[in-house]
Amino acid sequence: MKLNLCTIRSIVICLILIFTYTTFAAGLKLKVGDKVPDFTINDPNGKPIHLSQLKGNVFMIDFWASWCQPCRMANVELVPIYHKFNPHGFEIFSISLDSKKELWVEAIKNDKLVWPYHGSELKGFEANVAKLYGVDALPSTFLVDETGSIIAVDFDEFDLEEKLTKIYFEQVNLYPTLVSNKIFFTNETKYQIEDASGRVLLKGKGKEVNVSSLSYGDYLVKFEKKTVQITKLKSPQSATFYPVRADDKITISQQVHYEIYSQLGKLEKKGNETVVDVSHLKPGLYYISLDGEVSSFHKK
Picture 1: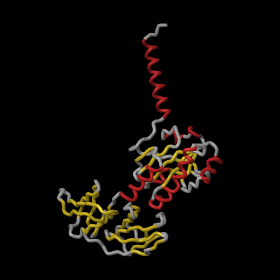
Picture 2: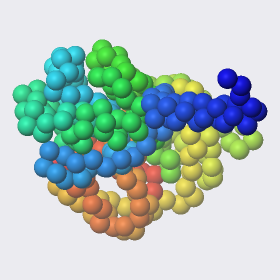
Picture 3: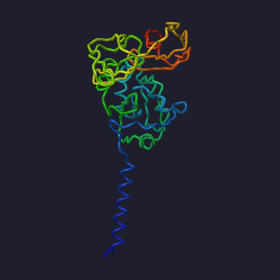
Picture 4: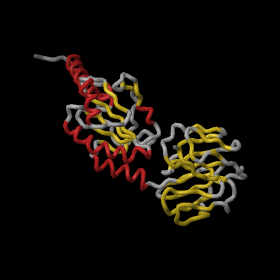
């Protein structure tokens, strides 16, 4: 059978289209460095939950199913990890590829998966979110940082605990960024403070640095391969706040710029109102900077 040029060209185009379609349909699994796409999915009560609810947290996306034995075995190790790191802000968003609701709900209960984010389309591997993430095997996991970038894929529980330990207990952060007299590090570290021209003004090692000798203006603090800009305030106001053990709000004596940081140096909230809603914070110790003067309070 002879094929003319038009026929050959048509066949080639069809093959290209088929290849492109099948590649696209199969999906490419998200990898380290990718931003996680947002999605909405129903929880066991039929209520829509959104991945964007975890914005600003380190969290794990866990694709699993009640019928997946390796998933169920992993759950045994995952529960204590959640309890260990959740007080510091870690969350889990579990996505079940079950097709029967009763089996999914029973597995959540039996495995004591106490975190609030559980969703399923009850479509198995045909779930839209599975296709969105390129998931074609279980378990499948993604660890995501505060910016929404993937920092690990398909890790076991030992790797997860190691990574979370580094994030929450070994990573050094600085606070506040608007400074009166002192800056603080979450762990002892070597540092140097430079002006805009790169001239080193202060250097040393420690957990806090007295910067009262610096003129007002912007500076760069370099530590742990990080560079953070701070601003030395010209004439900070003297403000106080109460209570030091807060239920849902704290009151500041006058209008100043405030910043609230966790024990790990994570900026939780900032603004300039005099009544500050802290009801969203988890119980624990926090630091509040009032025009650069840092104090602590406890969220009950």
